[in-house]
Amino acid sequence: MDNAGIEIISFYEFKELGEREGLERLKQSLKDAMLRFDVRGTIIIAGEGYNGMVCGLSSDLRDFAKQVETILNTTLVTKSSFTDIAPFRKTDIRIKPEIVTLKKDVDISLGANTHVRAAEWNTIISDPETLVLDTRNDYEYKTGTFEGALNPEISKFSELPEFVAANLDPALHKRIAMFCTGGIRCEKFAPYMRSLGFPEVFQLEGGILKYLEETSPVESRWKGECFVFDERITVDANLNKGRAADLSQRHAQDEEKPKGQK
Image 1: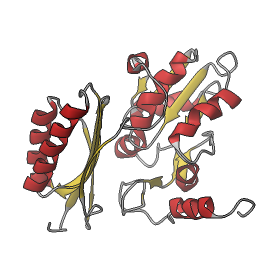
Image 2 (image 1 turned 45 degrees about the vertical axis):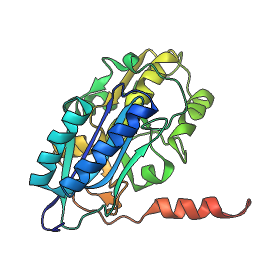
Image 3 (image 1 turned 180 degrees about the vertical axis):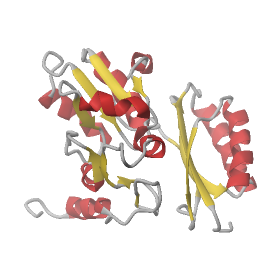
């Protein structure tokens, strides 16, 4: 792969993909497509849908995306950024129980009418009655977040329901606006919050990355850089490779220390 002008695309969808046997066939077809078009990265598939982030030359990615749409019988909605060096080196298709791990049964349809576009987001989070919830991990929050956002101080997404149970109450917290990197975690957590009885729930459509793409620096309420799960580590407000330290590695080291050490 020529590293000149590498494009990175991410995409996901909650869509019924069938049982294990069918997923195995999809895995092989997706693997073949990645190899054919010299695309690298990771695609996760599960009975509930797909979630991918891959890189390649723009022309190859266009052809690859068309092939994926045929394989998955869908229309891909992608987010795109560019870099000089390919952030992924391997071609990896994984079959998992969930495309984003919450470990809770969620009726995704409850998320209808909770999406807020980037142009509306500042108004929503500026309302003093709105609790702004960062659904990401602690190390992601510390790299950058929205003004006034609540940090649940979690180490993985599946811990978020426990935080909500201990700290939030539908009777008191009636208006919640949540966000994550690209939108997929909120696609699961917004309907989960609705199932708990929270009356007014909003999710940032397309996540932080879409917000940074569509919002001018003058109007942006974002502070810091955005952690991304590839070799760039973070991206800045212009979606270029950032300069922040990799706090996820520090977190991993802390997790490996004996109890009582920090």
